[in-house]
Length: 261
Image (cartoon, rainbow, N blue to C red; front, side, top):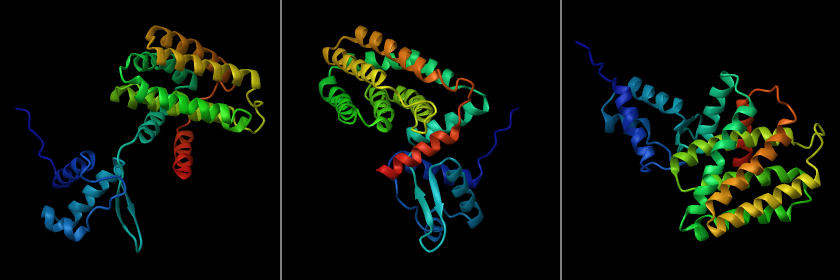
């Protein structure tokens, strides 16, 4: 007979706390109760509680602060953290930015079609994409801002498709590709910043795609997304095609985003 392994006490405590975090009973930024309180609540030994805290820390659901303001701070799972984990796996497998962009070439147009097919697209999709295009247009001459602004349009397109699994998985790939593309087109002079003609064409593509979504024309939205992504892929992959995915680019990009909030 197959023996069933009994869960350790620490795993049971970690499971209960994990459920509290994932259900929203414990929210982002909350601090877990003191160890003394949890000893009484769970009736476990200090070593078991410490092990439960380590389990949650390894899951990325808490971070432990040391010192006078110590405590375990709660973190909700995010696409950014998922993207970082996926990027580490991809780096370990020697996957390249070309692999990621090829995946997006197949997957992102599906999101574009889903956006166009949403009955509530005029309130839940169009205003968000229009806002990103407006920022691109306003800051068009700021070459250093163009690629990050353009990438946010793509990230918004995925995030408004209406399907949570696709938002998480495809959105994670978007963040990985965004980190790579931003590193390629940084203003360090190698390569030269993206030219005005290329930027103008990309902005025009974004507007046409938004128009198709606004009209509810899913087939046209898919086709426009495919054509635009293929062109953008060629432009970026003309540089650094021999690189593999670098997970630290995603984590550094995430920290920069958090600092700007």
